[in-house]
Amino acid sequence: MSLISCRALSKSYRKGPNLVTPLSALDLEVPQGEFLALMGPSGSGKTTLLNLIAGIDSPTSGELLINGQDISKLSRRELTRWRASSVGYIFQLYHLVPVLSAFENVELPLLLTKLSRRDRRAKVSAALELVDLADRADHTPAELSGGQEQRVAIARSLVTNPALLVADEPTGDLDRESANRILDLLRSLTRDHGKTIVMVTHDPTAAAAADRVLHLEKGVLLETAPGPHP
Ligand SMILES: Nc1ncnc2c1ncn2[C@@H]1O[C@H](COP(=O)(O)OP(=O)(O)OP(=O)(O)O)[C@@H](O)[C@H]1O
Ligand SMILES: [Mg+2]
Image (cartoon, rainbow, N blue to C red; front, side):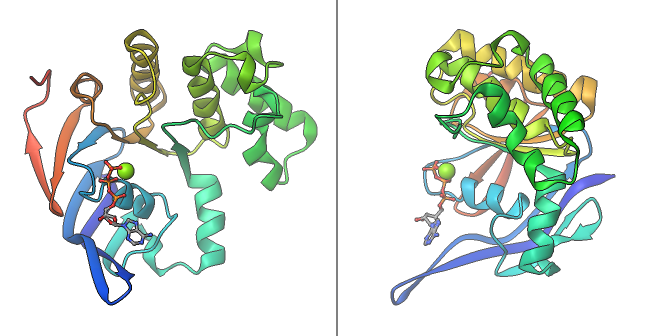
């Protein structure tokens, strides 16, 4: 079954007198458990599509089913609640809170839930364990390497146990070795934990780690052969 199903999905922005339409009548099916890479030139609408899938932005028209539910029909309030439990977002520049420890950063999404302090601690510890950073729980972002910061951000995206992870250039700011570690982690999240991942990347090596690669060009999705690209 598809976890994500986009049908004739369109998004337009009004920019002064002009209408910008990064996505126009886009169709996309992402099966449960797939690791999908999304490539395409700058301005082709990749982040726009991720934001729609993550419920951060709403489509202008079309249908967007996540796990069978049309999230384009949810109210703002319902969408906020849905997002908190169903999707984790990973950013290129991590977006950790500088004054909080790794532990406190990962705990943040759980402060919006009714979990007890004790249950929160258990979940944060498990998430940090999963990204192999249990020994860095007390470090602030400035005391971590870029790769470690991204792993903390991944732990934060996972701590509410969402079925879906979206990642916008998660390795874009990392050296090859740290990037590979992040890609191995993402792969294991699909393989061993059943997560569905949609990852935007400009890096062909990163894309090659995915199960499938789609190219977004002028609002149209084209499939390319999987595996390493030139
Ligand atoms: N909030 C907004 N208001 C107006 N126009 C927007 C808005 N967000 C995006 N756009 C426009 O939509 C188009 C697609 O933007 P988007 O950020 O999705 O591209 P992208 O593929 O992620 O590019 P990049 O690889 O540079 O990150 C661009 O032309 C952009 O200017
Ligand atoms: Mg972008």
